[in-house]
Image (cartoon, rainbow over all chains, first blue to last red; front, side):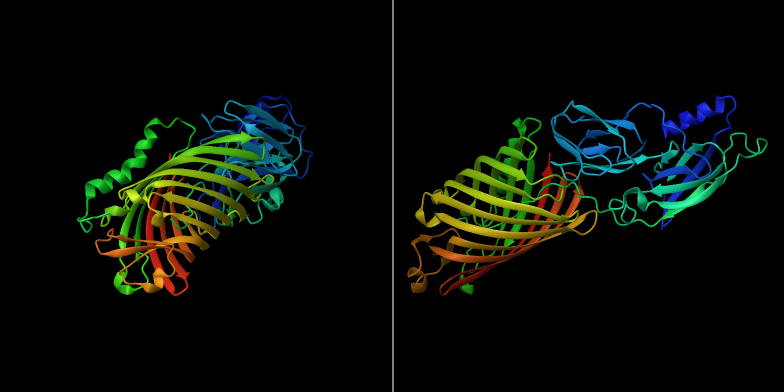
Length: 232
Length: 288
């Protein structure tokens, strides 16, 4: 979210460029409840995707036997730092995803490896010691993306006006892991600058609304091991 | 062995025994991931008796504290070194009260990356056992081989084989046995999981009966008069086969706490001797 906003600010001050258009998305489930951690991306249909620019690495930390954040969108070529912020626990961080396979065995507290995500697609992060640890990195071929907050809303500043394909991905979509980003719900939309007198901030009302059919949350649960019983 | 107050409940003793493992956490350093399990179990046939007149049902309260330190041995192997302290109290029959303390050591190998990769482990256990009835005290040890496989994110299969031995001061309470177990567990939703288990054990059991029992005399390796249950029983040590079917429903209260309700059916047989135990239990597990 930070990066598109920064890009939008640059576009607003760049001479000779059109003004970025803020597009809001409201993502809800079949019951009308807001959906957090959905990734919304815009792909231009009438113009090429602008070249990638160097951006700071994002952080996906390991703390309290969890990855945080749970879902991270990135542009292709971006990097992420994976610090182990546990006090004592070591991890074995890995990805078997075709878009970025890697493995950091014996990943001790205080360690902070950096991974460059140089191919588009979905990357699933796990820990080979703690099966319940899970995170997703969506590596996108567009600079225009955002992740929904708890209220299900995400805003993207896109430029230039024109036709775009909006794609929405969430880990609980059907085949979200098996098919990766191809499981996204897609819709074509046209962005046109609003009249300045009507909307000085160029926000297009109303928000684009997507209703997702989500599968039950089948993540491996973190729970204490119970005794297997047996004859005493 | 005599127990004149066998039918009386001693809540103070029971509470002390049940809390004993919790005291072990006082000196546990961080990183040892202590686990505390407290269990209440109703055993429909604590006397392991085959005749209805000898069957005595009883409540058992148990607490176990485990600590373990994981030591990585490369990417796929790990050692787990730790200890276990356990205490069991029988409110009606304090002769069965016992406590055990001992080290644990396990080696685990994981065959590849990911949650679906199977693991194999060998675990060694040793315990010094103290008991209210001195004849039941002694040394115990065992080795357990386990194969664990997740079938999907919600389903786990575990196959174990355990060989265990308890050398008691009184030979009648010696127990050597081998048990093979297959357990299938499935998460039903975000909070509940169900586990089904089948077990087959060959080994020593202790059955209590009112004499004369010539049928058991001919089978028993050792027999002694016993008053643990407040009756003039004889304890017979027998080599028998026990089949167990178990069902457990677990509610995860938070990532570190779970409540398990269980039922076990045990069928033990040796020649003409056959008895059944029904065990109903509730357990609270807390990981620190």
